[in-house]
Image (cartoon, rainbow, N blue to C red; front, side, top):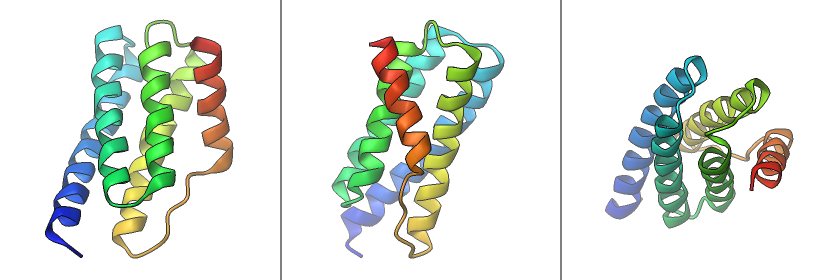
Length: 121
C-alpha cells in the first residue's frame, strides 16, 4: 500500500468518525448548519475513497453528501434515519476495506439515498 493511499484512508477514517458523531447529534436535534457540516465531511469522504479506487464507496458518499446538502433543512424523521444509517454504513464499509474485504454499499440503502436526493433536489 502506497503512502498516499494510507494517508487517504487515514483521513477517510477520521472523517467517517466525525461524520458518524455529527449525524448522531443531528438526528436528535436537526439543524441545517450541522447538516451542511456533515455534507462537507461526506464530500471529503467521496474524494478520499475515489483517490484509493473505492468507486462504489465514493458514489455512496456523494449520494450521502447530496442528501444532507439538499434535504438537511427539511428532512423528515424517516429521511433523517436514512442519512444517519448511511453515515454508519459508510464507516463500516471503510473498516471492511481496512480488514482486506471488498466493501459494497447495501443496495437498499443506496436506493433510499438516491430517492431522498431525487425528492429533495
